[in-house]
Image 1 (cartoon, rainbow, N blue to C red):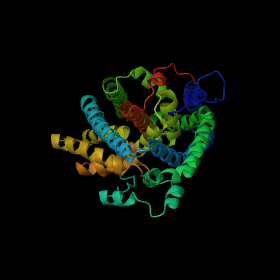
Image 2 (spheres, helix red, strand yellow):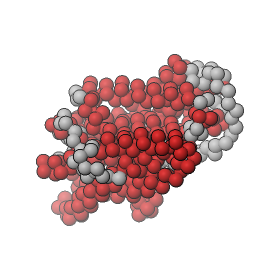
Image 3 (spheres, one colour):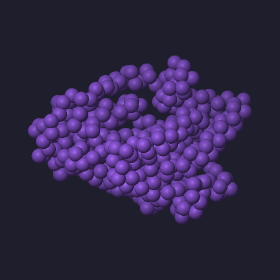
Image 4 (cartoon, rainbow, N blue to C red):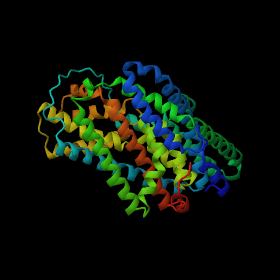
Length: 422
């Protein structure tokens, strides 16, 4: 656990405008970006470089931050058995909430019928990538060259290598202490660099949202407004019911604090549409706002950013039923069960594939006999849906991190319950 002096220093990260909370600055950037995009239209693309620079800076942090925090987190536990126990709890919680997410998506589409009455031509305009098989996934977990994995940003392979190295450092005891201290210093430097990058988040969010708002006009949104609304509603319900329910019932914690402490990460997730890109912010929220130990946060959050796809799974449920209604195909209860099972398992297999949402959707549609060409209908609004589902993914990552930390006695409830000051 961080000492009290370090906690106080980290509780107030640097911001571009002193005295105004970072989340408020980011939210202001989001609102102003939406207004600027609506006013400028296609010309809003001129503001996109602001967002591109911010995303590049965030991506710059991901690999060294994931690697260093995993190594420091596991060596800090000092017990490989404890790491295994935490790992099992983490994966079990992620899969449990993913299955719930798909079910909520299916229920929302069943109630609101977003595909009924939609009259849009569709053709195979999306080159859907083939998802890797389970064997390929398992073989691909182990990097043939860890340097290549780090250079390519292959998060799954980086996680495996970092876990193996950290366990080895723990097992060799004092002989591994010098290298462990180097990783601890490196991780501290990455935390500070993350803080510096986040100070410029409001400008990056402004550029990202302005470009999105200027890119999508009413011609694209009006025919598909209902499916967008249903997907967003289902996302909100999942967070409010499943996540806060688990925080309150399993964690015996105040869910309002969970929301307040997650704001920074959720706003960045919504604007960037990248769970991995939001990881540096999620790590800071978990440690500084919730009091999660560095060891648990450093292990659970990188794993979650890689395999937890609750928002994407929920999207599968909404869109799969939307497509069925759109093309006039009635799905059976067995089809519903297949969508839940396929979406849950595929959420792990496609997590590291670019465009994971569309890849997963292709898998689900194929399994229940729906036309793959219908992916092209939602591809035009995928960015808008991606923003919502990424926010759910990140909210789930933080929720699981809190619960795992609480179960292991690695949650400082005094920090969790404190008034959040940024």
